Amino acid sequence: MHPDLEENVLSRIKPDAAEIRRISEAVRNVIARAADYASSNFPPGIRVEPTLVGSVSKNTFLRNPDVDVFVKFPDNVTRKELEKYGIAMGMAILDEPFLKYAEHPYVRGKSNNVAIDLVPCYSIRDSSARMSAVDRTPFHTEFINRTMSESQRDHVRLLKQFFKGTGVYGAEAKTHGFSGYLCELLVLAYRDFRSVVEAASAWDYGTVIIPPGASLGDRLRDADSCLIVPDPVDRERNVAAALEKDSFALSVLASRSYLNKPGLNFFFPPQEHLAPLSKIRDELERSGHGILMIKLPRPDIMEDNLYPQLNKAVKNVSVLLNSHGFDVNRTLGYAGADIKLLFETVHRQHPSKWVRAGPFGWSPNAQNFIAKHKSGGGDIFVAEGRLHSETGKEFRTPEMLLRQKAKSVGFGADLDKLIQRMEIYAGDDVISTENREALSRLLFHSFPWERS
Ligand code: CTP
Ligand code: MG
Image (tube, rainbow, N blue to C red):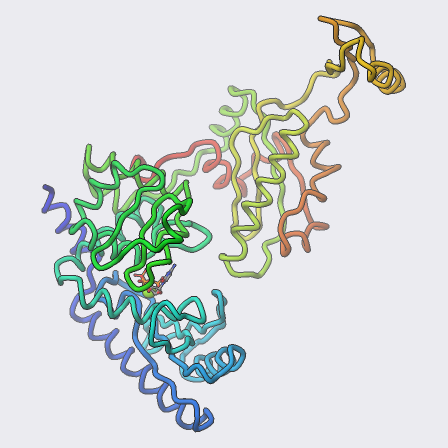
């Protein structure tokens, strides 16, 4: 349909021969060093198998990939030993190594200037008998290499870049989108890039996609997920389990727009615009909405741990604001050098008096309502048979509310540790150069493919 466009994209994302040579060299190097390290440092009973996995092993990688090397340990080592030996090896054999945590720790570093993830895992014979989260991975490599044609691998590259460009690539907590392996299975299931996009334009919540060679496990039959894609190497696992509604919705919207008007903009979108402060000020002036920001230092933790806490904090503060009548419109959790939580509220302040409806005048509770609200200085009257009280509001502005209560809403373990260093800003005090990026994103949202 648009072969020129796809060729064009491919020419920009597909690694060339020189890069492939450089990567193969690095991989050979790492695998040899890992084997040497193990034979001279591990007890004789522990024989490990360093194995190339991930997109490089499947020839579905984009330029400048992270190379995934798994070190398979026998199941007679404990989980603790696996981690200890795996980390020690990574630290010793990689250049510029540092420790990362997924479900279990691994080491990220370099070899021949190529980025390498060295991940310890168990060697298992049957992919449904896994012991740690990554043990299936070598089976994925084997499955893809057995079933996928060479030309389909380029279609996987196109699909990965399409999802990158539209902001939904990656299963990690920041994005909750499409993993590389999911892209591979989608291409297998629908045959090529365009057919995936055509199918995606008609996806509904809960769509079941069965890749060739897979079948739906019993536990997946009524899974509550955006997409249900059984893993061909483990029928009880949904490969799309990490995909959440926002990324799913974006993928459908992007696909429809692409079919309507394909273009490079879907693969390589322009940068987000930074709105001038004057435009931000005008927008808030015109809308009459309130703007609030909570700022915290950024904790030194992995993004996979940070983003769930950021989302939780935004949600809990929104609940607090809503429960006091400051209806929340748009929100943003922003992790830059600092953590910033932004809230746009429908009202900037409540009126000084507020009418609250109480029980009917004939109800047994009536006297309690009167006593309570009289003592609070309320003006009590009856309308439609109900008691009403007109009183002042406890918190006239959302800022007052946050200053009193925000510290106790629960932001997540690591953010809560920093809660004493929380700063609260409202209105004009939020509109500053250092908040331009966050404010632009909050107030002037754009779909990546619609930017100019
Ligand atoms: N993996 C998985 N489920 C995930 C993430 C990873 O099963 N949510 C496995 C897959 O088998 C994947 C491998 O771990 O191939 C490596 O993960 P990753 O580097 O994230 O994916 P790649 O397939 O290598 O894709 P990319 O091109 O993005 O590196
Ligand atoms: Mg990878």
